[in-house]
Length: 328
Ligand code: SF4
Image (cartoon, rainbow, N blue to C red; front, side):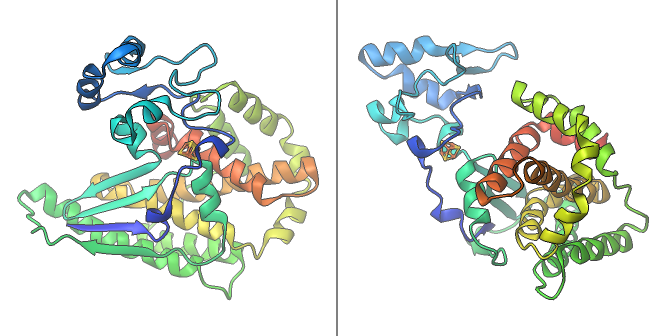
């Protein structure tokens, strides 16, 4: 089995109490059966508390019931996890242990990554403008393409990862502006797909994001403002484009979005739909940055990390929203 991961994958460390956001707030955390077995053997008052706070959600899955402030009940006032403090890191359930890591499994290949909904991951990605590097390791396990379906997926995967490499080469070509790179990618994609990409206009794009399921009320206010004031933000569009035409972070963001989403077309053949989703994703992030720029007359790295993280939380961490934006 081959494992592919971005070069920064192994260096990631949760910044815990220093995180301004915290993934233990606002999300219901599913508790897997293995963890439940472990928690059943925790003795004393703390063991009783864990068992009491595992609830069954309407879909039948078991999770930690959030407190009245939408926080995980095991997050202390310093935003540290009491399960780790009391029982050690090994006691964490699968999601807590793995977040923000993600995996995608193809026949013979596992792609690994770190999700941008974590502000530390967004910070790491945007901390330099270097080309994304991916490392490959092989554990020697023999690959068996037993079924016809596996063979088709494997062939598709090889084909699509080749296309992704072409996109990376364009995105990290220092001789071109960001907008020239986008045009080149669109041309390449159109050649590949044999038809024009049905990309949305900026306004249509915001409207389609408005139709996604909001993660919270802040998102609803944010997108409403973006729509309501779109014309006034759009007046600064040319100034913004001029200022960021040689930006190296948007190409890097797009490359990372391609990494996470494009190869999934190996399963369903939706290459064109996913290319549009990725291009529109970075365009949406750029529109959010433009909104910040219009409001503050500047755009800091911290602003960009915040906008990128919020996009990821709203889109990448809701399968329903991702599917809606790909296939609507
Ligand atoms: S969002 Fe990232 S840095 Fe913040 S608590 Fe979660 S894993 Fe740690």
